Amino acid sequence: MQIEKIRGEGLDAFFKGILTLETLEECYAFFDDVCTVNEIQSMTQRFQVAKMLSEGKTYNVIEAETGASTATISRVKRSLNYGNDMYEVVFGRMKKQEDVNE
Image 1 (cartoon, rainbow, N blue to C red):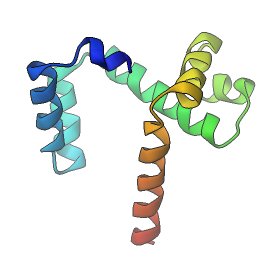
Image 2 (spheres, rainbow, N blue to C red):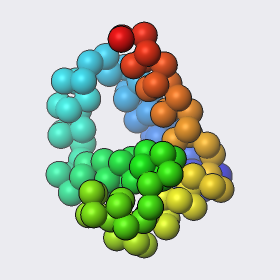
Image 3 (cartoon, helix red, strand yellow):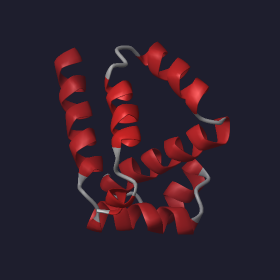
């Protein structure tokens, strides 16, 4: 796990802070304070790419719809294939929430 290289009290506190956010508006406000617009856009793009890859979309479709480079798409695909499986955990939980809200 690559995060082990930066694991520590500071990062623990940061993640615990994120876990206290309760609404979408709080998330918008917090990440607006913490990140630059470009950082938020980069994370959003990677998340969209991961979702589309998990849905079986092709690189061409993903590139056209998200503007992501093939290098970014490949990097995200590597995370999906060899990472910690957290994209799938999050996508599964989001799907369950959608099903409950229907």
